[in-house]
Image (cartoon, rainbow, N blue to C red; front, side, top):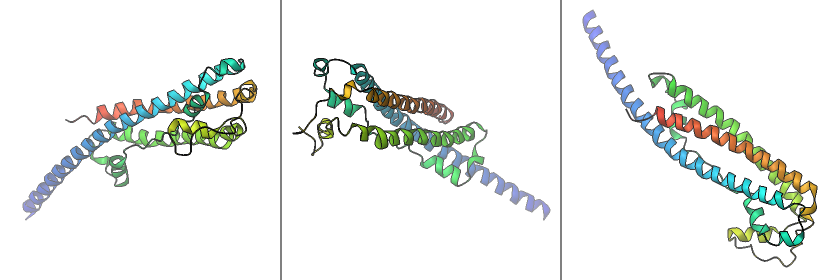
Length: 216
């Protein structure tokens, strides 16, 4: 009777190990596919951030120049590009499934588990950086620009239905003679830089997860 119980336990253990192995392989495959997509998403987002920074640097270099020099540039386009409206949404179903259902124990070593914990931790840091930039733009920078520029003409660069020529567009020259504008641009660039730093960290972590989840 004892031998029979031991045999039954052995069969159950073997069957459970087989099921765990199948589930582990399925989860690793899902992780690999998801982070391949996340790699594309972060590259697109980083390109938009770099474009915003480049446009802001061009604007900063125009500060203090004569009005005829300003007229050589499409200032509405540069201003529009300096406020990117891009959003980033990572594929996270597999990670959430693993963490919420306590399935980290399925992995043979700690490599994938450690990387997934790092992924969640970095997501919180990245969120703070994004929120700081959004808050700065919406609460401070854009309100400051209200008397100086035409949002309607800026929006024409995105072919928005309400965008187009403004009948009351002010001269942008006073804005570019204002040190406050220079300071606001400077701080905006710093916040964008911090976002890019977090994106680069995220990109490196994505590469590690893709490598660790390569099909066996």
